[in-house]
Image 1 (cartoon, rainbow, N blue to C red):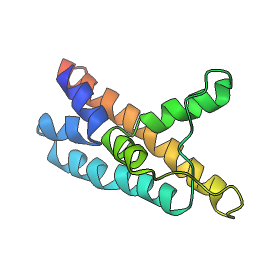
Image 2: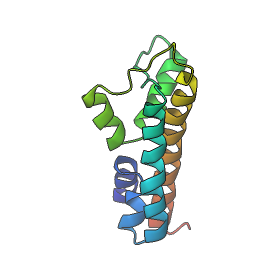
Image 3: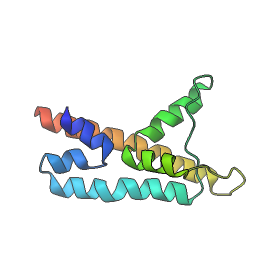
Length: 116
């Protein structure tokens, strides 16, 4: 369970903790970079709005980024600019990086259980 929690909080952290250095370093570099590109492309971190189910799903996907998401939210980043030509690309990078981090964390959990 520690590999799963660490893998969510720090992208690639679960793999690094389990001694899978190469994969851990790749994930540690690639996923936060994707998240940063999403912010740079003026994507918006979706708000938690239970009345709008699709927005809520986007917010949960963003939350999958772990600590980078929390830092960006606290720092006020990810406001997005709807009129920016790159707005939707930025949103896509933010959401995909969060979903990929969830998959990477689940992979670390499977490795910790000996399934892989």
